[in-house]
Length: 178
Image (tube, rainbow, N blue to C red):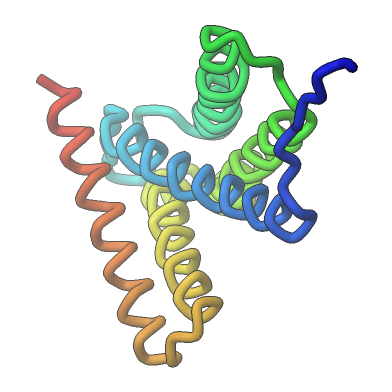
């Protein structure tokens, strides 16, 4: 009689929850990295609206390259390479998680692109870094509400998440600058 092998397949709702959780984590991760990266970009603002630093297409390339690059690197390291080193095969769940993470990263890049696409170069430089910070706060609020917290508690949670995300990004930016 052949030995039977079992495969752990999570129930559909568990699988769906993991995919949503991974996409949400990627939104937070990419947002923190974008805050740090944008804070580290050299820029100057002069009279009459003259500015130096990344604007327009350059700024979009930074936003999109960072977001998509981080998602792909994360998926490669944790969902492809790590299982391969353990002698495991990539599962459909790993692929779905990778797609969800890429979706979370694309979401951050798309929302962060709004100031670049619709505001002047000066205003875009001033506000683009605020977008991922706001995303962190919104995600914190939504997660808290989803877990049954009151609106006030969720607001506190969102503001705290925003503050901690910005703090982490600032520390990363300061350490990278030296």
